[in-house]
Image 1 (cartoon, rainbow, N blue to C red):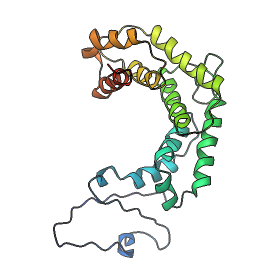
Image 2 (image 1 turned 30 degrees about the horizontal axis):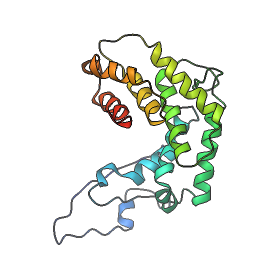
Image 3 (image 1 turned 60 degrees about the vertical axis):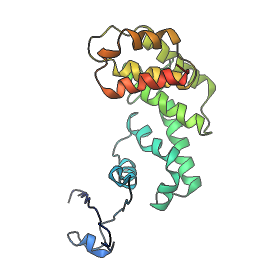
Amino acid sequence: DPEIATTQRFSLDAGDTFTFDANVFADFQNGTASATLAAGPLAQFDAPGLLSALDRYPYGCTEQIPSGALPLLYLGGVAETMGLGSGPDVSERVSQAIQQVLTRQASNGAFGLWRAESGDFWLDGYVSDFLSRARAQGYAVPDLAFRLAMDNLRNRVNYAPDFDKGGEDIAYALMVLARAGAANMGDLRYYADVKAEDFATPLAAAQLGAALAAYGD
């Protein structure tokens, strides 16, 4: 049978109780299910459930590898509690993810989905974001590979076509560059002053704002 996942959300009023017991598995075959519980003000984000879902990503493309490793940079303790590995195991998984994506880095610093090639701007930003965050957490990211990744993002921004509605990949790249201290302030101010209303999503506008804030603007 295919895997089935269910989510139940509920609030407890003052004096109410909920017992987390075997009844949550009533509709499943015995011994085939597992469950996570998230409680408190941030329970709607269900970090354990999301972490578990990312851990079960079925493929090994360059998008999925960082997606499974990124939360381990910040939620390693949650991963350990869930049985996804001890502290050293979690660190090794992040290191392996870094090594895997670097095998798909082309000579110009870009990243291919399955092999070393270039093409997708957003993917370049996403993998570079992962490498930057991992590097900031103390993981080993080769200097040359990281520099090539940053150079590639700068080149992608410099040669990005104009847009009337869009720009999500540009905003993401600018945020990653700014966090690494590698963005061009002129680019940031141009997109903020001239193109701010043309970004297609609130997230893109927020990323541009984060890039400017990283430079104290």
